[in-house]
Structures are given as structure tokens and as C-alpha cells.
Amino acid sequence: MALLRSGWLWRQTSVLKRWKLNWCDLWVDGSLCFYKSDNRRELEQRINLKMACIDVRSGLECGGVAPPESNPRENLIVVYLRQDSTLNLCANSEDESLAWKLTLLDTRRNPLFTYDPYDDFYQAVPLNSYHTVYMTPGAGPGTHQLIVQRDPFDGVAESVALGLLAGMAAGTAMRSFLWMPFFFC
Image (cartoon, rainbow, N blue to C red; front, side, top):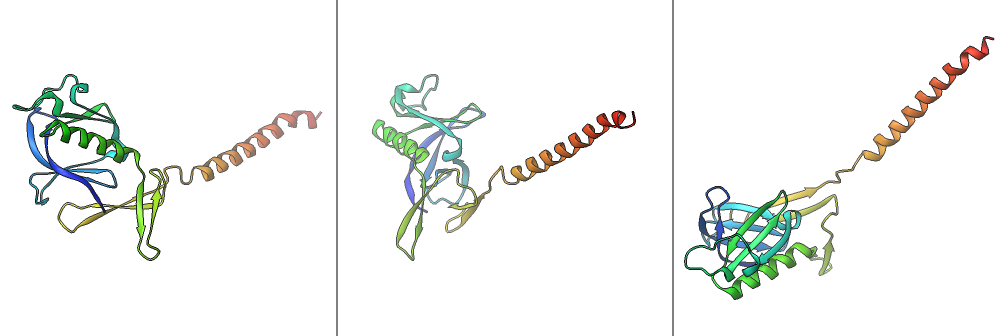
């Protein structure tokens, strides 16, 4: 798995709204991982940007967020996530903030690429392809986590067809009961 960007970022906690310094890794599969230190031993949080990210804003676009002490507003990065939640980050410089923003936006939009070493070929895997195995970085160094996506509508067609067949049988039975009084006249 390829590492797109890593470095120190300030992250605002969700409950107490305090700023804490974390080592951040952004992987090609869209995983944004936060660690306590740069040795990557203690994973604090992982966010899958391909599934959860809606928008990313930086600098003066981040209204209503106060940066940590001794950092200007231009260093802020706000990642808007699903379920009306946000992830507030702050870089050490305005250039670094802009670089993180562009990388986060590219990661959110770009497809995942898999590498076939036998053919020496990279193949794009669309985000919502099902029955696909994704490999993400694990909690410790040298560990990985496999994610298998299944089709949420797998088996829906069979149940719809069975329901239609049951409805047709019930309709036929009801129709025969309606004509029965005319047969005895």
C-alpha cells in the first residue's frame, strides 16, 4: 500500500475541543490514520475518506473554527464528513495546509489502483465495486487489514422474483374463488 502524505498535524478532539499534535498518514486507499508519534505504534483514529469525506476546506474558508495557539487561521483544514460531522486539522504552515488539502481532495476522488506483479500492470478499481478486497495499513508496523466489500443488493432480485410469483399465485386463487358462485348457477 502506498503512502501519499505523512506529517505532523494538529487535530481537534471531538468532545473537549482541545488541540493535540498527531502524526498523520494518508494512504492511497483513502485511509487517514492518526498516531501519537511518528513511529506509528499507537493508532488513535482511522478515517476512510473515500467513504466518509464530503468536502475539504482550508484557510479562511474554515469559518467558526479557532486554530490552536500560535497558529494563524490560514493553517486550518476542515474535512467535512458524513452524518454532519467535521474533522478540524491545523498544519504548521499555509503551504503545508494547502498541500494537505489538495492531497485529501485527490484521495477522495481518485480510484484505488491494484498492482499485478506478474504482468507489471496497475489496474484501477472503482470505489463501489463489490466482491473486491482492499488492503489497508494495520494498527502496528508490518500489519495489514483486509476489507472485503460485498454487494448490499445481493439476493434482492431472487426475493423480488419470489414475491412476484407468490403474488401471482395468490391472485389466481382469489380470481377462481370470485368466479365460483357463477359455476353453480
